[in-house]
Length: 371
Ligand code: SF4
Image 1 (tube, protein in one colour):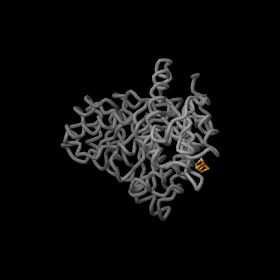
Image 2 (image 1 turned 45 degrees about the vertical axis):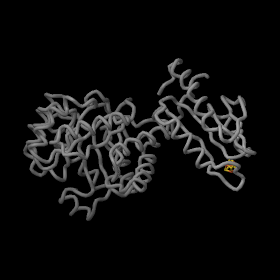
Image 3 (image 1 turned 30 degrees about the horizontal axis):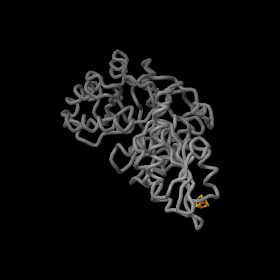
Image 4 (image 1 turned 180 degrees about the vertical axis):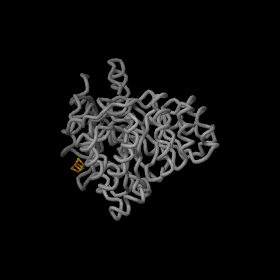
């Protein structure tokens, strides 16, 4: 079956310093990681750990939990200890929760410069505590909560305003010798967001956490995030990503992983190459593609399966894939690695493809080609 092809990337990664978020390295040569955020009350330890377990199963590598109350802060140590993936505490307004999160063993703490006026005189102590514990800080600038001073200076949350806010906050920590930092400058408009990250990338070497904030419901948010992350990642900018959707967090992770796979920043897993159908189709392509996708769900090997509606592009695409079908005249020609291995009646196409996919996957696993 051979080995999977060497991934081709659009641009070299921007060189950034590497930080360690628990067991996950972010920046430098570390692979771009996918993160999400829980939607449970953090103080509800059982529900939060349950959601973290679901996120972990969906491929999430780092999880963030909100910490707006003392009860939430009190829950952090159990959550940080029991979570299978690094936990970042998300803190606004209250410096005391930053210390609580560091003491609780959180892998990192996110603070927001716009919401941390009262942090100013605490930066030295936070830097000292975070340094002693080896806990990185994410400076998380958000268009919706931009510092009033910068809002007055720029009139609105422009890319320049977001970047100035982030770098000013970094400088407060740098004054105390603390550089264990990653940064985000999120905006809900992908154009502003992309410009902000481009400017930020040129002005510092901190690792960058990409996000389009309040991107919206699943469909719109997926597209906004894919477009914005795609533009930046294609230029080598971005070290960790969080897709923000008004949808269950596991959906965010699926989208994030798909974005990285699309750009070859991560080994592709199952990929269905299916045609859009047209007046030449001799089979219900949508149904066939859906059934094959459902039948192969969860497959972890980098398998490319072509589902084509007719003989125009069908055989060509099917030959390029690990496995494929080209349909016509109520039959399907099944291809494995470019060879027609059999022709089956239309009613047997799905089961034959699944059967053959399983055989190939088993061989790939034996050969150590799992993603
Ligand atoms: Fe149309 Fe055939 Fe192309 Fe599918 S493979 S879009 S059916 S021409």
